Image (cartoon, rainbow, N blue to C red):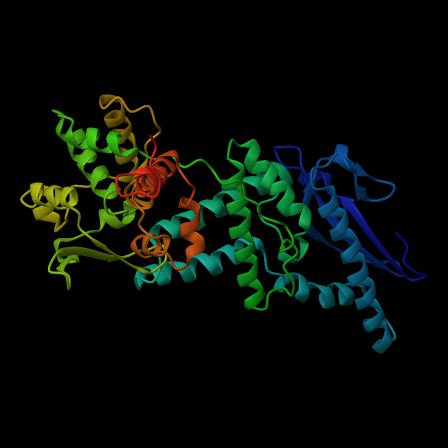
Amino acid sequence: MKVNEDLSILFWLKRQKATKEGLVPIYVRITVKGGRTEFSSGKKIHPDHWDEESATATSGCADYKLINSYIIKTKAELEKHYNQVSAVNKRVHPDMIKDAYMPKLILQKTLMQAFKLHNEEFAQRVDKNKGSKGTLVRYERLKDKVQDFLKKKLKVADIALEDIEMAFAVNFFHHLTMENIGDNTAMKYVKTLKQIIDRAIDEGWIKHNTISGFKCTYKDPDRETLEMHELVGMYEKEISVERLAEVRDVYVFCCFTGYAYETVYNLEPANIFKGLDGKLWITKDRQKTGVEETVPLLPIALAIIEKYKNHSYCLSENKLLPVNSNVRYNAYIKEVATICGIKKELTTHTARHTFATTVLLENDVPIETVGKLLGHKDLRSTQIYAKITKRKISNNMMALESKIFGEQGLLKVS
């Protein structure tokens, strides 16, 4: 591709370096008055998706926009460096242009480097008990999913941050949903990816987050909860299998305290204290938010604590309750549901939802109090539980009926 009388820039395929998958690296050749030099672009493409005449990727290539954008940007950069070098040198060798361009190439930061920066910093926060291990696992899981996307769809191991465009977020979201990941979860992955890139901006690696305009929308899911008669029935059910009885008790405990799995797993006897009202309370900072979650212990929760105070695991590990690993817990609670005749998908999260909805909101506990008990930073987080249930409507209408038509009511019906 002749740029001017002296300079030519060519993008070509070095076929002798083809990979086992049939991908061929794209090389860049600089020619100045017959002198040549070349370097690898770091990008690969299948020969069937390369137009030799125009030296561009065709639309049959999954990442043709990314490659063609690189070609345009690189050509412009090389031409700029040629003009700068030729302005101060009578004789210009192509290596002089390459050397002027390569420092920028070497300093160019990538998405995987951004993940490394972000996740290592967050791991340090976890070590100082300022971050959740579960959140760190989610960051690492996102990194794995991005790497899988790069490998499967873009056929590369990494991508320069400057080469990321809005299409990256759109295609990544589509890739996730095609991998049987729900839309809400996929949206959360993209939202977190924005945070990773924002951290790179803070570090000065790039100036703009090109995917910041990707709108992350969520559909409010129907949150599975137990009704009070189901919860009481589960608590009173005779279960002879010890492992299932323990999981049942931990689950019911969560239904009456609102604690998430990670919090209840880390509870110790020292987390219990006597409140100003003279009754026993329990407190623990939520690892997810760092907000204190302090709850008065209702009678069933107290009975469960008393039941396990001399349990061998609790004594040896200084734990309040015998809590299994998350995987086992979620598997066992499904067995418990079957034993109790409950045809609902129970998980560690449904207990927290049951506490918020069935135990608190349906019994007219103000939403501000609910948010405080759940350890939320603001009421927006609590609003997801504030749907009016049929039980809540029934309770309110019964109270209304009594007020208007009861013995001391305003109206008498003959």
